[in-house]
Length: 219
Picture 1: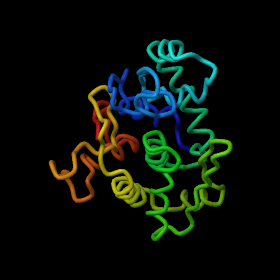
Picture 2: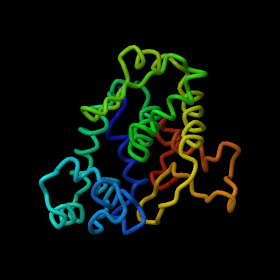
Picture 3: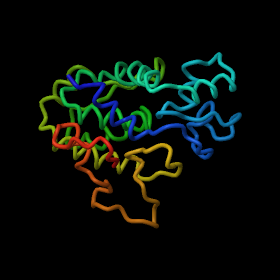
Picture 4: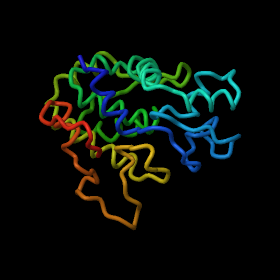
């Protein structure tokens, strides 16, 4: 069973603290820039998500709660809204759970669906149930069993490459939120440091599998 606590160590490092990026749509109600006042994001918990979870709160209340959000509270939201709903705990490998969890956080269910579609040519059993009605994106039990039977590191690399193709650049990256895969280069300006477009591609694998004890690296 994948470890939520271990995966969250890296997720929280990636996401950083309070975001002050007024160009990031996640910092506004409804995920729309300019839709009301700037509300912010902390530990990767966006104003857009927080407003969906607490629709009765005023803008001022949402802003206050985000500014004062603790890591423990953020982890509770991640566990309920991402980890449990998506059935990531049933995955055997921490690194695979991390890849899917991280992309779901950054790109949403539709974004993770793009990754799955890119992987289907090599892994045709992948389906990924997406239900807009109850806001769930999860794997079927049969999928989980087949994912758990795959050679983990090769699958991990394939997911990385698919993520870059599905989500190739960041227009709203800033230093307060360390997103590992909104790849940190702009189109036509800076070339990625590897053919896959992934910087330090082995770092997360090494740390989550115990090969590295460094907790301060970032992709």
